[in-house]
Length: 441
Image 1 (cartoon, rainbow, N blue to C red):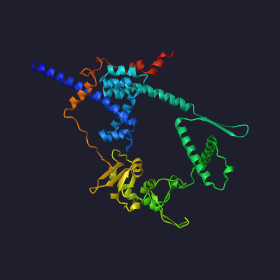
Image 2: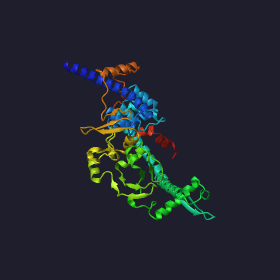
Image 3: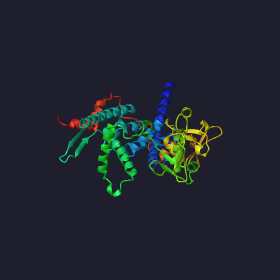
Image 4: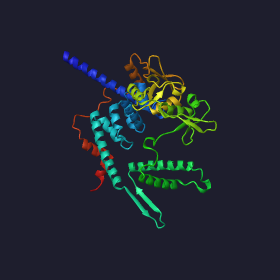
């Protein structure tokens, strides 16, 4: 009798586990709906790198898991059948997460049937097989593209050279970047040439610019480099900024790039945080009278110590390993270049602090405090939300109020213990496999 009662107790306990799991899956559906709306409206775009970074910070989720939540939320926006099955507790979040890796509106109905009939382990195996078919097809397409690459160069009757080609996507991307860099170089040369009357140099068309750029790329390849500068200074951004502007952004004075383009004073302050600097003195007519030696804003040894101490961007919720040194009190305002007055920020958040109104200060105990543009504190770890005393009952009440009929058998699969034949399952489910089987030999 005791053993019989114990077995009944175990059955009731198992049913309660299954029922609560289904309620949690239904709640996950609501969570994913909220994440999708928050992401679409860019509610995270107030200092955070992405919706996943905000979710990791605000909800205390590991970043990889947060990225997966955002991915699934976006996918379910175009898969209404899978979304409805998750809302009703018919599919677990684990199954939906796997199915959304391969599901499309055309295959959703078939995969939904798989999810209801199979266990989570079976679903994972079928999805892996499905992706292998996709990868093999993609590999065949990639190989076909690679074999079709070609470049034809021949001379026309009038002496012009005709170039016609087909490049792989990665080769094409390199060519497009090279042409863009060459066009920019030609544009700078044209702007710098002041001795040529404008009427003698009509503006070339886009196609003519590309032709000139391709010629420059070829010439530069023969001379081993587009830019004639030394290797150490080949790719630098030079900013000319008056000292009063660095100290006080509202002060009158220039803040321009080397080509003459105006940039904001805060942009110059950000670039000057960790850049090398050369102090130049001018007379009343603007002529240079003295050029100082080049100095580093942050010496190499101090930069290494900064990287070792901070380990990455210190902006709440970020943690990117590669960062830039930021003077908490800018050196132009008398701030010292010391470890206590420095912190690491990634490029995105360095700009946020300088140009988007965010603030950072170091407290007497050495900790950092960030503030939003509206002066609200942005904590490293946000306070936890208030939770009802009986959270489980609250969850069940909400699902009941939404009209969901959830019980211990809602998420039970239709599997009866038979062996899973993944190959057969893919053959009867995957569109590519179906198309191949329908093709006559």
